[in-house]
Length: 406
Image (cartoon, rainbow, N blue to C red; front, top):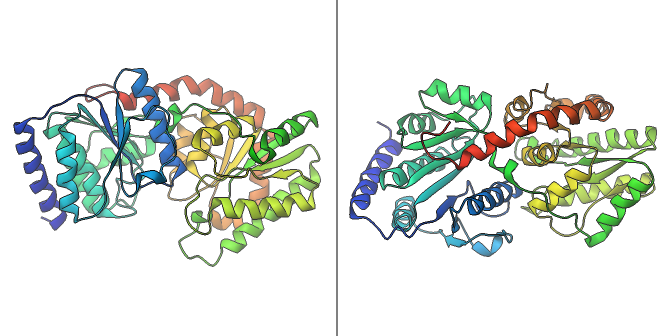
């Protein structure tokens, strides 16, 4: 048996003992996000869950935060943050167990972090925390997760060991098939971020006025997200991908006077981020095309990003959670993909995916061709998204149900 498995078994024994000791069980829900603050996708999932849990009277809802809690944006209706950082993995786990004793429900947000792609140890710990909650008598749920084809073996074993007391959600049909193949017992859900309501379009930096101006001019707004992380970390081809976006978008703006471009960053982490590169691209395009490209100033919240996607005629994105925000707002999308996460998303809407791998996107012609197809077929695509939406929304809300629900 691998050392990670030995550790997990030992921690579960401790959880069973602590469960026998009982706790105050004052109620409420503890959310365990997949990573620390900074990801707008994580923010969207947490905010959507908080809103719906409160609606159902399952609050207060707290979030276990890795790192400083002040790095998280304001989330409406959140009870509070529990800071969890420092110490060995075992010490961290025992701190979590001691805190679990005060809750009735535990929700581990699986996202793309339970298959070991980023770190097998972290994935095993997340799955073990969910099982530990069940051992202690909590209603334990793993909120919709992806599962990649090349999942790490320790993660597969941890998934297979999950008892029926844990509700395991696969957030797309492809991931469900892969989880089934491990011997696990997942249910099909949809991403928790589909539950997020759109906010208001921000006024800062003239974004709302710019959008109103495009409407008055009769232009279609194409939302664009540039994500360098579709390429491997440290890839020298990021500048090539940037140039390909520049060429494709500039060509479209030249040939389509009724088109404008709104940059929508969806991640602000690091010195070079979606936001910094979006600003650069918007600056280049706006100079070339008389203000028909715009970049919101300041940091967008997840509800604001969804509001922007809702105002767009279509969205071209390298971030899956911006695709989710767009589809949830009824806006058709095309994607520059990575990690194999996007194809399963489109299956929820019974749509042939408008997806392109980054190497093909760098060639430029394929990126422009896909974007033209998105724009030309946007009305039919919007109708298909609307038809599928009630079913997708119901699958997303299935994340809120405990073990036994299907």
